[in-house]
Image 1 (cartoon, rainbow, N blue to C red):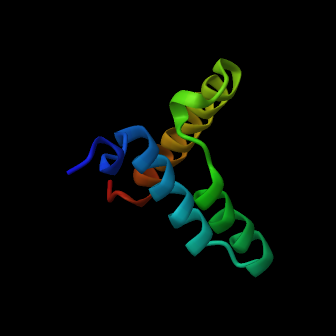
Image 2: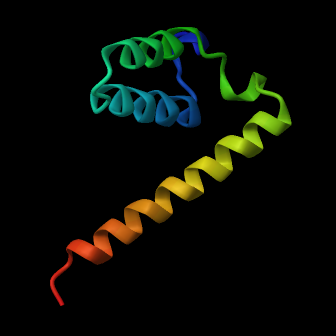
Length: 76
């Protein structure tokens, strides 16, 4: 296996998140834009620091939403 064949875990996680988002987007045009971004998105290590910070904040927000959803759906 070549070094170029190895995908960074952060890049893989972002691609998976984007794919799931596109899958659950009802607007086909928006879904297509997300799919296109998956193909053109540079590796995370090439992102400017401000963009990496914004992604981290967004991930924390999404994690918080998931935790709230779990709390709502768990039986008392």
